[in-house]
Length: 281
Image 1: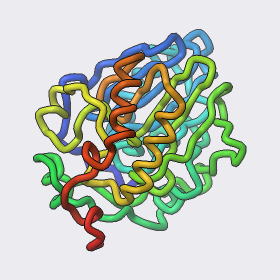
Image 2 (image 1 turned 120 degrees about the vertical axis):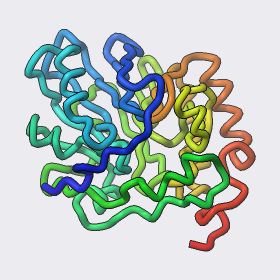
Image 3 (image 1 turned 90 degrees about the vertical axis):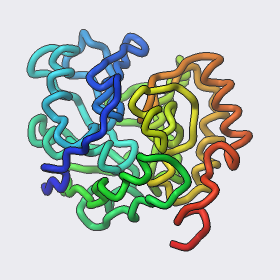
Image 4 (image 1 turned 180 degrees about the vertical axis):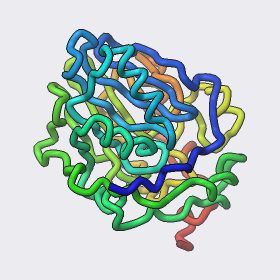
């Protein structure tokens, strides 16, 4: 295994960094700097949980500490599930696999970025947006290499270790991006298919000002697929959503905001200009 995220700590944080929230009794969301990771499972079953996404580079110790507090010392998940392979979602994955020796699951189209074969396209600092877009050339795009520790998600839509959940292919932000949905209580783990804080606004990222927005602009390369993914998620009529960035969102606030995003995606989400908007890439 090769860890290209080692030493790549990114100086970006928010007022919620280090804050955890129990969203429902078997789902706990932890903010690491500017990104969320999810612990899915009953706290009373110490080895029957799954970690969704692995946060920023250099954050393994924070995740392990949170797992110990929630599930007891020395507990480890049945698996790690990745919504996609961007640096802020796989930052600690190699360290965690070394620590826990558990399988990692992702969509087949993310495999090149998780097995060292391909880097993501360059972030677009020219995209319409604020200061974070200008910082984006600092963000690592190199793949991690999980070797045979990473496996493709089952084709039937099931999620290993997460009974009652199914994965949904939600490309656009990346080719193999997925979201996770549980029908019984209409819980949604979104990844970056949409977010609840505008990622191109440094003030909103730092203060975590809540609004439903499209995927982060400076790393999204296929806007048509991104729009279709949002429409697919809106059709599920979720009751709550944990997004990759921003606070969890519930009920009517979620449904109203997601409906508006789905209906007005071109205006709200797609930048007026940028490398991946005008086709110049």
